Amino acid sequence: MVVVLLVALGLSRAADDGSDAAPEPSASSESSESSAPAATVPDEEWCATWRATVQVQAQYVATQSADDAATLLTLVERLRSMGYPESLAEAGRTELTAVLDDLRASADPSFTPSVVPSEPADVPAGGHAADDGHDHAGADEAPFGFFLAEHCPA
Image (tube, rainbow, N blue to C red; front, side):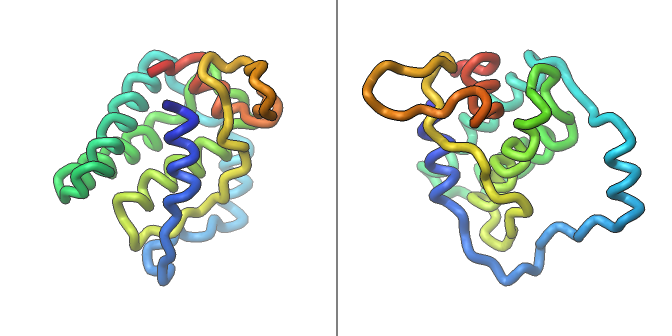
């Protein structure tokens, strides 16, 4: 399911006129952000919200209802406000931001994602390389995908 979601999100980027683009950080905010540690949240708490988000996103894809879109946007913002899961490697934070951007863009076509996905989407369930003759991303190449597979199983 994680693989399907990441692939679907990668394919769902919508074009935009840029009206709701996130503001560019100023030099002072960049330096203050880099010096302050990022907020973290226990994995179990973050994963519970992630699972609810995935469930609502699947429902929204099926229904395209305004209510499901609003719920999805609320959950995406809740995940952003929670901070990063405590076990997520720092290298996976950019991809987490890209996935949350994609989720928002799927329900709000006027939104322009601020981060381009950097991880391959083919992370096998369980987080271990499958011996199926296909190349699968390793933990070094897909830290967010492996975090999901290891800590947030469906």
